[in-house]
Length: 265
Image (cartoon, rainbow, N blue to C red):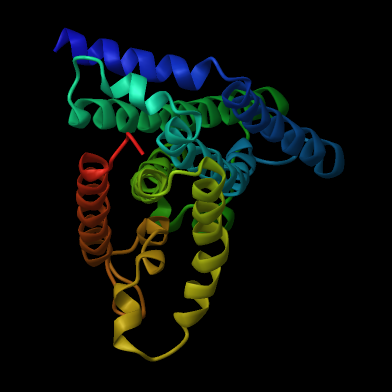
């Protein structure tokens, strides 16, 4: 167990020794600060901090997901591109442990980004707008469905987003394992996230049953907060089931390809 934890530590060091990882974190925090300053400048202090936090989280979680996908897509593919995969696999660790350590380190990076975003938006907007600023009933009903306490709602929001993030990162990690080129893996992952995702959402307006089983139709779980089901008949458990099925496929394919891959080529 100690050897595996050391392996995870090594993979974390690979992520954080690169300046791009810290730049990504800095961009997230700086973006939250910029949005709050602009809101304060143009809207004044007569605004609830929770309204700003909700808006910033909705916007910046997209950026957080993109950063996590970039790290995940590059993780394995760049080892093949640079040739370091051979050095990694001649050590006394099984392929399963090597791959699992990489996967865990990527998820930890995504979790760190989410924690940094959540805490920074809380602190920045507390300073800018004050913790005692409140919402009227109409505003609270629009921003936080179900009459939720704003803090409790934001915790649920981040929890739902993290589930979707895990599935999205796992998809990018699978692509990184299949392709040897880091650039190709990153490009394809971003294309699926930004291009195909938006296209599939447009398909949701068509009346075809098979559309209900597409991955990207279920990545936004936040729509279920405060509601057991939607007007189209979909519900949280169905979406979780679809995401779980895709997750199992992604993980199984990732481990199968990596264990069968000839690293000597």
